[in-house]
Image (cartoon, rainbow, N blue to C red; front, side, top):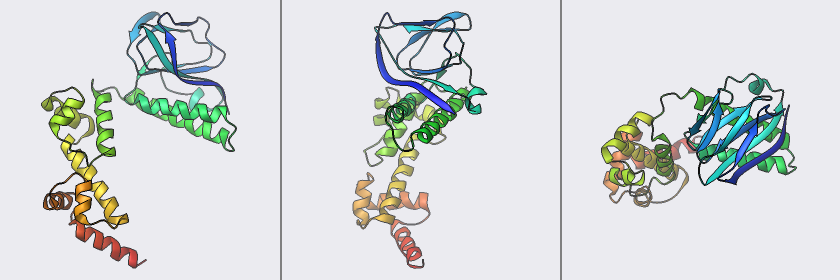
Length: 260
């Protein structure tokens, strides 16, 4: 069983903020930094960049402070007898850089909502959220070959997948992450195993399949929605990815539905 004592997110502290507990607490503490911070780790104080997670076990020395005009963080204080927490292989008291800190921050917000309100499945929801959070922390701890600009690349990839119909081009993408086009292409392929423009095309085809399966729009309208000014170009790229034309895809899907 896990007991949450307090959850906070997006808390802003002044530049002279210091959190100093030499003997630690009698509960667990997990923090997520949104700004740079100085943190005591294994006998010395070092400055760490923003977007790091740090887990402190009960009784462990805790010392961190702001090293800019403001310190912003999320945190959760809890007690637990769950083995996935008490026997965790996560490094304790050591900052873990996070590729997608926004994802973690949203988990803190959801955790706070479940903690402060008496919903019917409150305890179960808290357990699920904590397990998800710690699974993601384990993934972060195992990622040792991180690209220096991977956070920016991940945000770019989210924008591509959420809006594939935008007029994406390598120069436009490079400008959005403040990288040169050639450097962006090399980093993107290394990080995700696919080129940035191929990722755009695959995202467009996924959206097209969704509209072909569950909509009644004309193929020309779907092509425009997916960012294509030319229906023939859309059809060629769709066929390369899906193995058939958009029209054949829609007809096959409709025939399969009629046989059920």
